[in-house]
Image (cartoon, rainbow, N blue to C red; front, side):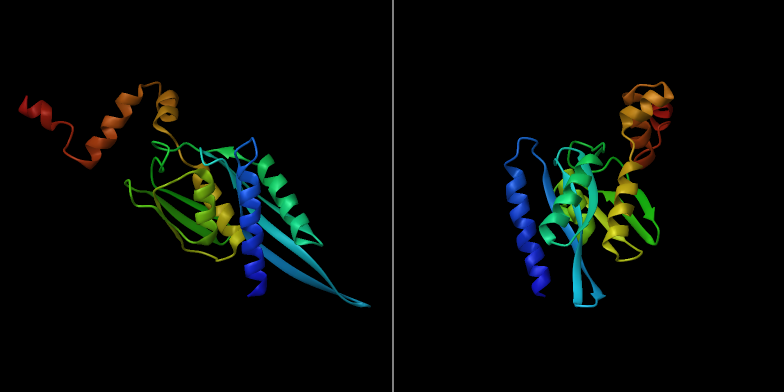
Amino acid sequence: MARGSEGGNQRDRRNRDNRGEGDDLIDKLVHINRVAKVVKGGKRFGFAALVVVGDTKGRVGYGSGKAREVPEAIRKATDQAKSNMVRIPLREGRTLHHDVKGRFGAGKVICRAAPPGTGIIAGGPMRAVFESLGVQDVVAKSNGTQNPYNMVKATMDALQRLQSPRSVAIRRGKKVSEILPSRLGAKGTPKNTEVVNG
């Protein structure tokens, strides 16, 4: 339990420090793993850290680092996360454009778009990714392993599968207005209702 509280204090301290930087990035410490190697003189401890970094405006990345001390492991993980950041399209800057599934190894996640006011309904590692990304409304579920590394990678896999209406319109050679009504028509009344009545 002491290790968990120490990780939480370290995470809060790192978050406060990074909020003051010019690049406006925040980092969240997802997991710290302590490993012990038995040597002739006793045990030699090492630490592995998993960190998620984002700008809360559509960019997010994750990284892992190993070192003999916790702060050094977190620093390595943060540097790796900053270099691996990707941009994710968001609807209205608050939720996903559509429902999406992601998978990495035994980790399987489902992420669903949500109406305003829903909040972030997701567990531990997934919540850290969404908060760093800037998502405000999402419903997510993990159906596979509880390993935080695989959960974060599966969540990132799902997010990278997202497609914005603009990108779909460009690919299909159409306008955004031509694509969105078809999506609304599938949810509500059939599109040919107006033609019959008119």
